[in-house]
Amino acid sequence: MQKLTLSQSLHQKLSPQQIQFIKLLQVPTVELEGRVEEEMEINPALEEGKEDSNEVEEYEEREDSDDKTLENLEDYYQDDYAGYKMQGDKRSPDEEDRERPITVGNTLHESLMSQLGFLRLDEHQHQIGLQLVGSIESDGYIRRSLSAIVNDLAFSQNVETDEEELEEILFKIQDFDPAGIAARDLQECLQLQLDRKEGDEANLLARKIIEVSFEEFSKKHYDKIMKRIGVEDEELFKVAIQVITRLNPKPGGSSEEIVKNQYIIPDFFLKNNDGEFELTLNGRNAPELRVSQSYSDMFKAYDHSDKKDKKLKETVTFIKQKLDSAKWFIDAIKQRQNTLMRTMQTILDFQEAYFQEGDENKLKPMILKDIAERIDMDISTVSRVANSKSIQTDFGTFPLKYFFSEGIATDSGEDVSSREVKNKLKDAIEKEDKNKPLSDDKLEQILRGMGYNIARRTVAKYREQLNIPVARLRKQLS
Picture (cartoon, rainbow, N blue to C red):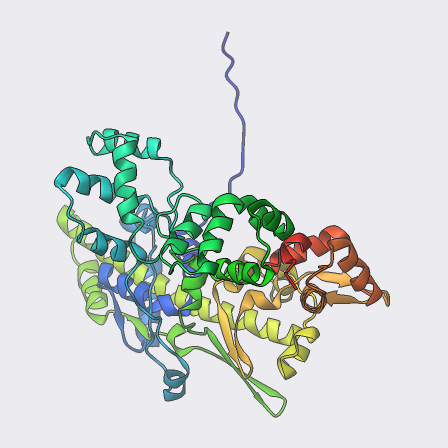
């Protein structure tokens, strides 16, 4: 027997204005202008120009006194405001000099498609080639199995083939540039690159090492490799190992490498004028926007006319929606500017010792909660600012998240930044004997000897964050 029950629940729902502000807050400076342009395209009541305070006040008074036929606008504001882009207006000549554009070039996919066009393939083979190129990931590998790609072609493209034909075309694509592209694993990637090198003694030995002893090479068990393939000339072996280590394990490039090739447009500028800080927000964050006067005039005219007419009432509703949306957007931009400055100023105050000299060792432990409490905002708001913004200082440009780190206790009872500990860890590894690299246990003992109370698992975590491999993989030939 079914039972009917009645229950109450409380749900928090963000208003359209809050959603708009949150999405604008996480947009970096370089993308804001595109977001503004997009809003102006979809809302004719929003335009460029200095805002007239009298017009805003007059409109707000009308908004408060408007009748109930103009309510229930929430659905209209549920648009997904995605895809922000920007360059800036309101910039000083100084900022023009300090900023550099993001570099642009052909993508990996475009390059491969261009090379595919030079192969003499029939229509059937070309379809297979397209599927293979489309299966290449951003780092240059094909990790999807050939049997799965055969099925993809059959079900999605209605192209019948088999693994033998697929591999035949794959081998052609593996001849494309960059060398090593379309490999199915690291071993094949290195083999493809070595195959293009001249057949001198060191290169031939390098090919043999990868072909016969790849697993031992990946673990740096050099003695086992020399014994297995019968190498007696140690100098030749060292040269062959150097040949391999200079190959590119990610022929397609990685997202990190792409980011490094881009110039950063800072969101803040900080100058140290003889100990006095001057913090400014990039002028691109302050576009001059206003509510369209012509739309305001239209609203006044229609608002005083007979609203019993259905079409006229729809027109009034439409105009008010656009005016409301324009005002909300302008308010969200201003709120964004205010939140950015408050957050950055608080970070500056917290890390003042660091910003005076740029000495990384003077960074204090600081987490999102520390800043959120000081500006009386939610941690998620600070996170949105820290994760997508950067500041240009006298000693470099840094993402805001660079200044956040956890604390490590010392013997004296003080807390130091984890970044300081990471620097000490990195120094210890750089100075180690590469024939006998230091284990995580030994590194823990060294750091404890410096006064840092740190566990071995924390050493391992920091080492991984620094992209430093374990001891056996750091071993080098003398």
